[in-house]
Image (cartoon, rainbow, N blue to C red):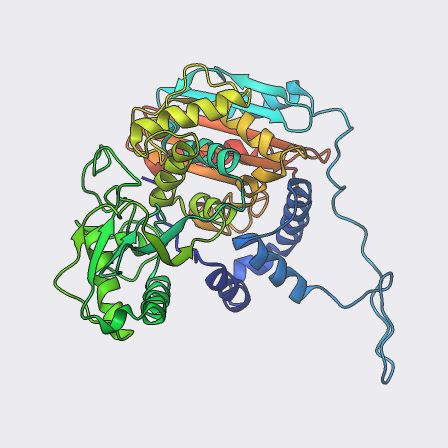
Length: 491
């Protein structure tokens, strides 16, 4: 599994992390100030090319950057009232050129000289595939068995994200509803497949339901029965790997990803009955809101024609995609795969999701030959994806004609800074802050797929997939070297 990230997953927590934690850094970070400035400049350029920062993590980063931006300098000073301030320092020359769409791509020969020796590292196992693509032109600049399907581990989440955003759109929100039928003697909590539903949202649903019941006079007719509906999903109740701390049981209704601790990412003990737990918590909150209820909630489908008493909607899919990619969130990944299936009128199951994701990507003209999407998270070793497909997905997300896919790029972890890359790349590395990539880790399998800005100012997508690795740490370091070789040298 991917190493769990300690990066905050909510926008508010991310902003706290950015404003509160960044100033307290080890001394070696101060020595790398030049690299950090360079990294921020390139990251800003890459995200500018990728589109607006409109949700989640990138909003927090934008606010953090704006808060720390100088008021003015020798070239951009705005006069202000009051006593004159000291003369500003001269403006520094730009350290990097802006992203360029019309320049000639980097020479393939140069990439071969850099990557060929690194691909011979024993730590990369028995089989390695690689590709580098110029996102502006779609041209493959470097390739080694780029079309060979491999076990992608969590890098398959890139495909899951593109499929869901294409099928539902970035603004889609997953609805959890409460419905009542007839005389409103029974209220049904209906799961829509939102794994991020939390206690606050559940409390809001209970309060809105209580208000609807009071408005209809149903609260004066005695206790109501609480039921719960999970028919939005079908198929096996567990991932093929079985009960596991890395993923909750498969159900359309859960609270906080069925976690039994206070974590919001990474492995954690999970409830064996997430839907039942959610319904019981809802019933208790309904009682707190002044509505008497009968015995424990029962599982049943909401009655046909039942009216909606309350609705909660998740964060937009774009924000869910960012959280999924940054933290390698398996629960969100499986939910997004099922959203793709439901949008296509297929069952909300592993099989329905596999067929829907493949169909969605195929319809978009992406190179899916040999691909197999056994799940949305990459936990299933039956997944097969080529390095070429992963790089093509990232190039499509960078295409100005597809703004709906921008969160695929903005959600990628940043080397040495966020998510599953937060603990990789030393502060003094030229790649820190410049490589943005999705990681993938299973026993014997390691992968890295992402983007970097080249020395000539072009956004490149890359993917490196390995199998037969025996030392995860060494394999990750070798993959990091490959991605780092694409980064312009500053010293």
